[in-house]
Image 1 (cartoon, rainbow, N blue to C red):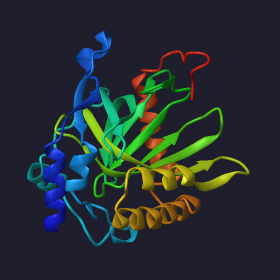
Image 2 (tube, helix red, strand yellow):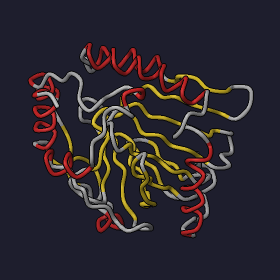
Image 3 (cartoon, one colour):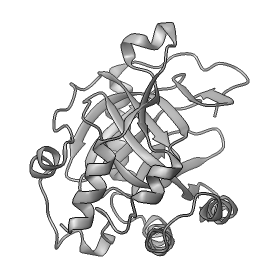
Image 4 (spheres, rainbow, N blue to C red):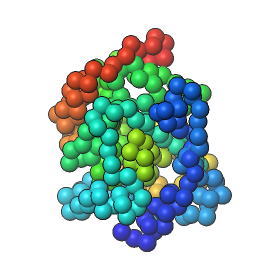
Length: 265
C-alpha cells in the first residue's frame, strides 16, 4: 500500500463527527458531528488512488479485513445479523448526504451485506423517503470505490443501483458504515431501459464545484464503464443469484414496516 494511502487514511481518521444520528439518539433526533472535512482541509490533503483496484485485479490481490482494519483504524467487529445500524454518506466537501436506516445481514467472500426492509427510512437534508421494497447493499471487502444495492420487487423495476464513491468502508463504529458519494451511479432497470451510467451532469457540475482531483476522476470514470459492463453481463456479484441469498435472509428477519404513502422510493 502506498504512502499516499496511509496519508489519506490518517486524514480520514482525524475527521470529526458529522450529521449522523446514533441508534440511541434516533428517537430524540439529536445529531452529532462526524466524518466532516472542511474545504480548506481538503485542499491541504491531496488525494490520489486509495484502496481502488479494477475488478480484474480482484483475483490477484487478496487482503484480509483484519490486517487492514486494525492497521488503518477501521473496526473489524461486525454486529449480529438482525442488528440495526446506519449507513451514512457525505459529499466530497464534507457535507451530509444520504443517511439510511439499515440492518446488518451478514458477510460472504464479496464483503458485508446490509439490508433495508420495506418501510425503513432514508433521509438527507431537504428530502426523506421510506423504502417501498426491500433491498440489500454490499460494502465490498477488497475495495472502497463503490457500494452495490440490489432491490426486490421495486415498484419502478429498479433491480441494481451502484453508488460510485470514495473511502466506502466500515467506520471505527461497528454500527456505522460510511462513504463519500461521488455522483456517478450505475443503474439496471428490468425491461427496455436496461443498464446505464446515471448522473453524469451532476458529476460534471460537482467536479468543478468540489475540485475533484484528476486522478480520482480518471479512476471513477473508467470504473463506471467497467461496472456498467459487469452489470450488463450479470457477472457476480452483479448477478441475481448472489444478492437473492441475502434478500431471502433479510426477508426471514421479518423486520418490514408499512411504507408511508407519498414518500416511498
